[in-house]
Structures are given as structure tokens and as C-alpha cells.
Length: 433
Image 1 (spheres, rainbow, N blue to C red):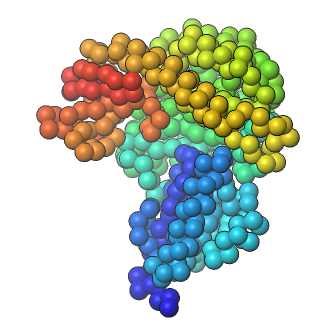
Image 2: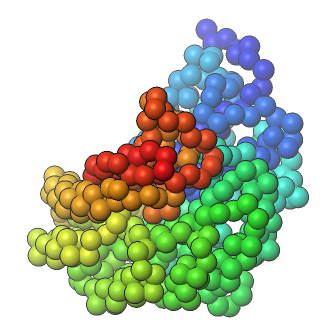
Image 3: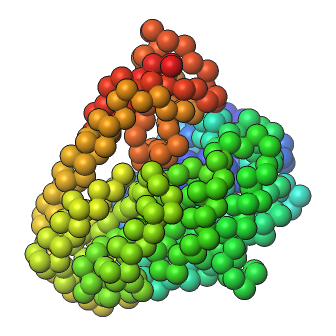
């Protein structure tokens, strides 16, 4: 027989998916805390809110499994209420309500006031920039826009997040100032598409103007750009990166592919020639810039020739950072009308080949750093090491700098000069200079 949980009303927020979801969970927790609620991130609690991801098959599967796990805990009496929000819930709410009816309520990506209401909290408009951070105190994500207007054939994000909506510059500066007061040293700018920023509010691309405003915030020492779209990239942004020491010489620009037939079918609005020209401008205008990209292999109609074009291009271009995904056939996207004709094992083999090429490139680039002294931001201590990053590395996806904690002490949340003494494919080892 089910017994009622004896724990007091503690709300456990569980976050799945990308940095945009991390940000949304932090905003939710900030609102709950301001309402006097006992709230925690991924700890025990008798009320559970699961912030889901619905981007590709693996992410959807993880989200569904997490929901099922907490429903079982509810049936066993270990938790009292289970609520689901985020992208999966936005995209598949009717199906989820039918298939997993034991969830107490489902909410979409823009239903924060309704979610708060069911948690007996009021949405407080005055809490601009006030969040409960789940990242190490050294950095925080700053979401500058929501949604996406791009027509990429493979992507379901517009279905889940809606049209592009920029946040006003003054609101973002207020939020950045609040984060700096709490000790945050690095802002990681995120959006579905950074380069579209401002078109809806100011009728022109204003990412450069936003950067110029953010560098004036006292206490913020690094600003990093994530998820820049290649088509229509505003080149004035490169000038600001070059001229402003606070802006990291780093950019994350998901290029997805390079073979022209695939780019055309993906509706990326660019070509191999244009992409190569843009990368050349990056390297000319900002010498030493670290460029991160992500690629998709196994897209419908991708021939062996298309793949070899991609593989050779990766070898020639020598990206500093690279991630590779296998194509996921997503319903209600433009590409769903195409035949998913590349076998799963071929997709995986192609992804492995790309990452083998990148692993060698990364090893070679990292060997060049041995003996150099690099300014690092120390995020945390983990096991036997303090873990830091250079300006060329973003959290969770890029290189880490490991400092032996038994031999050296460094302060987390602070910058320190580290001499690199050893390097592997994806990690650097060092000591305080």
C-alpha cells in the first residue's frame, strides 16, 4: 500500500539537456526561493520537477526514462508529486499525458507562471537576473534570446522553443551585473542563434553592441560566445572580440556539414566556399581564435563521397574543438519527409572516423601548449585535481586543465597563471606559474 512521504515540502528540480535548460531551471529555482520555497537541484525532495530535453532520440529516451523512474518512486511513496516541463513536454504533451498519466501535470517551455502556480508560488517579474546557480561559482550562462527563425531541415527547436525573441540589452546588463555581484567571473552567452540577436527588437543584428555593453560590467572578466549561426554572421562581432580583452578568443559555430548537396538539403543557407571564406575571416581578424564546431553525419542522402568530403575538410581545417552527432530522424521537421537511408551502423562508423581525425588534431594542438603559461579560471576540485580552463575552453565540452591537488593549492572561482607541463588528446596538466 502506498504511504505518504513524511518529508516536508522540498522541491527537487532535475535538469536534462543543454545549457538553455540549465538556465531555465536556475530561473525556476530562483522564483521558488523568492517565494520562500525549499528548493534544491538534483537532490532528494518529495516534490519533483523534471526539466526535459526533446532534441534528438537519445535525449528524448533519457527524458522519458527519468520521468518513468520518478513515477515509480511516486508509486512507492518515496515522492509525492511529479511535474514535467521543458522541450519534451512542449513537443509531446498529449502523447505523454496518454502514455504516462501518473505525472501530476505537464508544462511547456513558456509555461513558467503556470508551473509556479501549481507549486503554490507567484511569478515575480521584479526578479530580473536573479537565479539559483547550479554551475560552479566561476561562470554562469546568460541566455540572450529564446527560440529560432532558421529553417534548418533537421531541427525541431522551433517546434519546442518558438520564434526568435531577443532580450533587451539593458535587461541583460542588469542580469550580468547581478551575476557579477554574486562572484561570477565568466559569462557564457547562449541562444539558439546568437548571430540573429537584435533583429526583432532593434531591426538589425546587434550582438556587437550587446558585447560592448557587457564588457563594462565590473567583475566580469571573460565573455564567451556559444551557438553562432554561419549564414549572415555579423563581422563587426569579430572586431569586438579582437579589441576587447574581456571577450574570449573563442567561438562556437555549429557548421553541421560541408558537402554542398547536404548543406542545400539541410537548408543551411550557405556553401562550402562561403563557409571556408568565413573561417578564413575568423582566423585573419582574430589571430589565435579557438573555433569549436559540431557536425552531423548520416543525414538522408549522405553518400560515401559526401562523407569523404567532410572528413577531408575536417583534416584540412584543423578545428580547435569539434563534436560529431549521428543524424536523428525527427517528426514534423522538413527532413522527416526524406528517407532515413543511412544505416545506423554506418552513421556511427562515420562519427567515429570524424572523431578519430579530430582526436589526432587535438593532440597535436595540445602538444604545442606544453611549456606555455596560460591564464586559467579554476572551476572546482574533483578527486585528486583542481580543474581549470583556459579562455579557449568552454565547460563540459572542451579541454580541462588539471592541477595536482596533493602538490599545489589554487583557489576555486579565481584566475591563476598555469604552466602547462603535459598534454593528452583532450586534457592539459599544469602547475601554478
